Length: 95
Image 1 (spheres, rainbow, N blue to C red):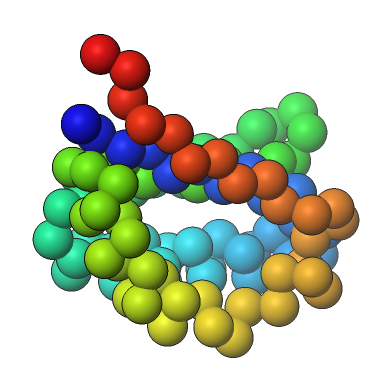
Image 2 (image 1 turned 135 degrees about the horizontal axis):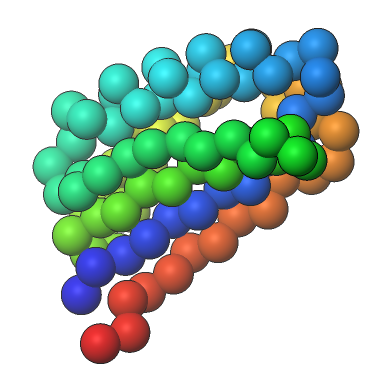
């Protein structure tokens, strides 16, 4: 069963490019991990919110990728770059 991980970011205007750069670095790292089906980022042009989405073959594939994810974002100061806390969604596919 596929698994979707979604993160909604609310970057401060002065840190939008910083966040996008960090997300690009994370995306490059994710593409080395088995089980990733797709990873992408989307920007809401009205609110400035950035939504990161990754789809996985299974929840376990995502869990196995956690060390790679952690390493790729270990130096990202989300608390400084975000106007409000990011929202995380861990979603199992409903068939």
